[in-house]
Image (cartoon, rainbow, N blue to C red; front, side):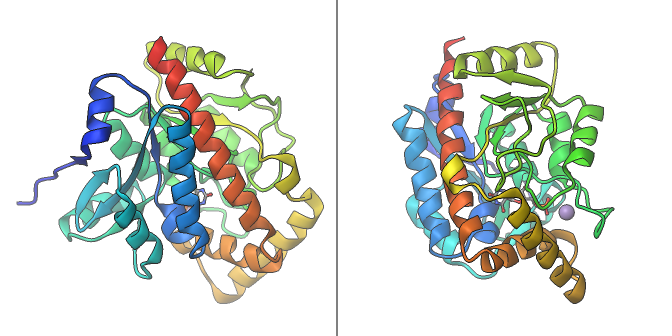
Amino acid sequence: MTSMRLVIRPEVADAVAQRRPVVALESTLIAHGLPWPLNLETAFTAEAAVRAEGAVPATIAVLNGQPTVGLCENELQELARAETVVKASRRDLAAAIAKKQTASTTVAATMTLAHLAGIRLFATGGIGGAHRQTHPWDISADLIELARTPVTVVCAGVKSILDIPRTLEILETQGVPVVGFGTDQFPAFFVQSSGEPITARVDTAGEAAALIQAHWALGGGGIVLAQPVEEHTALDPNEFMHALSEAEQQAMGVGVRGKELTPFLLNRLAEITEGQTLRANHALVIANARLAAQVAREFARL
Ligand code: PSU
Ligand code: MN
């Protein structure tokens, strides 16, 4: 029989035990979301941003079948360079463990493992959601995980490649607070605003921590804490929509679907926009890591 052993690296385990701030980081954006070597640079810079705020970073992945919380530099490097890493969402974790695979974890899978490790704050780029009309049945497991797992996901909204109003309806149905940090409008990843309202606004890390604590005191699950990508790297909404239609056409043309769809679209957009989406993606991941650490610090004080 295979028994699961969750490997929590000592620095992370100590911080969790002593209730010091810890921020989980995901590995799918490293293995599938960004190209080499920007992916490794992003992973390192995100960890450094968490440390600069006085929190401990814990990047999560499955390494040879072992769910691991707190990858070391060599492990990050291997993951970033590897060409055949499985992308594991919640449903894929068991198979990756049983088959002793190395797998990157999506937002859903990272939330699952962070929660098991006692980590409450998690930073990523953008969560998954409901895809647009071209792929109407493709709804990310990230939304379902948010419904049930009490971890706060700091992000730049849902990826602008998605159907955002539909995604927000699903989050509402599932009782997930969608909190705007310094904004009244839900951010849209590469684009600063989706034009859709958020459910509550906070303007400081302390206010965010208080809201999070109240949600969990009520027995709530996940929370989305969203801040817009910084203005000077954001994409113009119209230019972005043009690029997206082109990328979608290509996806339809080659028939990509399932878990390959998000990485395919991100990849195509990077080419179509000549790297503009990559610069935005990098900047927003770092900013989110920093904010998650600030909120983790405030949360640890409560
Ligand atoms: N944030 C990024 N880049 C990414 C992702 C997040 O900046 O590639 C990943 C996350 O792991 C998220 C996944 O869970 O994209 C969504 O994939 P899907 O749409 O197949 O659920
Ligand atoms: Mn999907």
